[in-house]
Picture 1 (tube, helix red, strand yellow):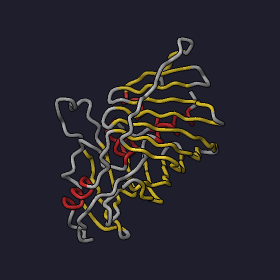
Picture 2 (cartoon, rainbow, N blue to C red):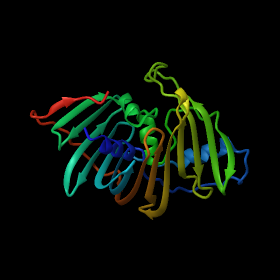
Picture 3 (cartoon, rainbow, N blue to C red):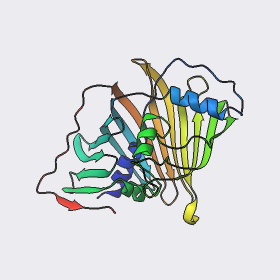
Picture 4 (tube, rainbow, N blue to C red):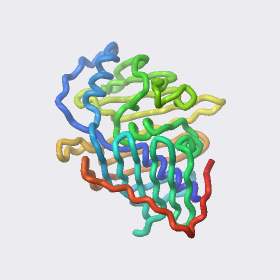
Length: 270
């Protein structure tokens, strides 16, 4: 499968939108981690379904390309996306809590792999909660927030934590939980929405950083939507995407079509 387009697709699953609610602004000081975290969670995007169309310009090492696509999501359940070039679909993706499904139209191939395989594609630790959180502009559901420290960085609230752990439940076992080596969030002090999210992994002698920035927020249907999104992945591969959203809708009735031709060959990226 085309590795560049795979990078585009997986990284696109890490970006998204934010909501606007009535807020009580916290003082812009450095000692309010618990209050800032509460305001962040109180003002997080609440949705059942989400849909958006987008255009994206991507750079990977010396290569560049322009693509279009659509993403659909059912909260805490499914992320679905397709990518098109010159009006033709080249990839279709569907991600659940357990699995990743991929159709490669050009190569007439498909893949069904564990969601953990995404970590190998982008060389960074990832799970469904992280994907959904980065896509919606929310913090990661089910991860511990007790160890956040707060500060002020260029008039934005800054929350940071080292080795954020997934809270163990009946569904999440210690063996399946993902630990985030370093996570930093920058929040707008007026809306408590995330304007920048950064995951850094310096383990195993490497230094990998995934950064997502949200800009050009516009209010539509009581929702603040960042219409410009930039994704940077540094480490072994230099990778950047500039994304522009064109249409967004929340809580529509959606379907998630995904069927594979019997003529397609099954492959794996594991």
